[in-house]
Image (cartoon, rainbow, N blue to C red; front, side, top):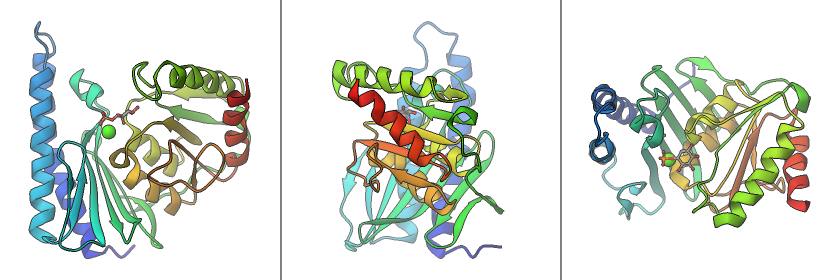
Length: 270
Ligand code: IPD
Ligand code: CA
């Protein structure tokens, strides 16, 4: 059994508490879905409520730590070396449409490095977590990236940028070229709409790789350490080590990493 740090336990508790509130609200969304106005405002509220729960829980246990949160932005802490990076509801579009694939994502950055990550999918009750040097886990089960080494056997996930973001129409055109390149060199592509879970699934060996452009630190902080601790690679398209400032994220197992980045880069040249 892996030893869990006190910080990790605090993060897991916060994620579970927010997860319970979100599950209750998700039940309501399924009702609102059939109404003309739709559940839009209700979901924004659920999102903010979940963020408040997480902030309250984490602050109670770690009053000095700073925060970077999707809804409320940055809060400096008295302790400048520790910061929680939080997405209270990743996969908002899925949640809004009553699709049961979304998660709570909490990373802990210490001295500029993400050392601990928790991604909780409350619908499937899957708690993915990792700590630097301790490995990655799904609850108590150790996670390893998949062992496949051939692109044509491999399944990849991605995120489709909205034409208005991700670098505008130019970014969208680049995405289409990369998609085309990976389609011609893989067993299939998935777009499930929750970047944190995409990373967790790479760590769990469910698919071989994931790429997306223009994600925010709260989408990826926790997943980044979980993939690394599961023996995977997290880089940019050039194959350089990922940083929270990188435009692109490419996560994969070790078997296809080089070929995957090369396939993505081949599209950039077209
Ligand atoms: C989004 C999801 C999605 C990704 C988007 C993100 P949100 O986060 O992670 O998978 O493709 O780029 O913004 O808005 O649902 O928290
Ligand atoms: Ca997100």
